[in-house]
Image (cartoon, rainbow, N blue to C red; front, top):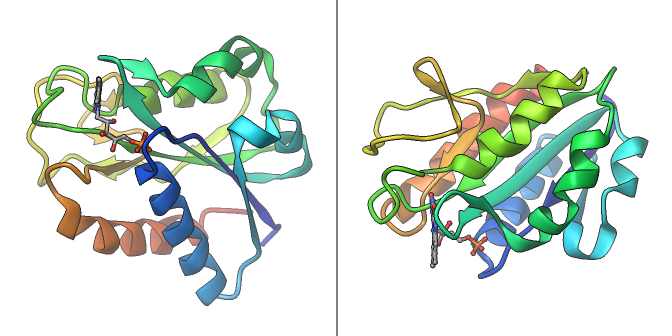
Length: 170
Ligand SMILES: Cc1cc2nc3c(=O)[nH]c(=O)nc-3n(C[C@H](O)[C@H](O)[C@H](O)COP(=O)(O)O)c2cc1C
């Protein structure tokens, strides 16, 4: 498998913690993964990876986290041909039930529209929310984490998701 580039933004550290765990799991399995806080890296290094992971919490009722928000116009212009991508999000399904995990939908859709192959969809079983832009049919477009309400489930969800996507990366 080609080296993975993981790009995430985080305002209060939770997505950063998830990214650290995802990186650790891939490394345990013997895969190489570089992790970038997009506040520091910007979008440019995305071009260097065939396999990418994108992480973003939802903020301000259905919005992207602020660092992603700043880069979003440029992100939408990127081409993702020949790239395989997996998305993960962090949100609060109780507090923001009508916008749970929206950021995953906001980032995953331009990726698919601009030529990327999306992997790592995730079942909605075990979650309670009203609406989400991250939904496609009965599934989320990426891993759904919720440290506000389901903290104790996060680790197991990450292990399962990493196991799922590792065989889908090229
Ligand atoms: C003002 C505010 C708005 C939020 N809006 C949403 C939202 O629309 N949807 C959602 O799923 N979570 C929402 N959240 C929850 C955050 O996504 C959650 O706290 C997350 O863990 C933050 O991730 P971070 O620490 O990586 O920034 C919101 C939280 C706050 C404080």
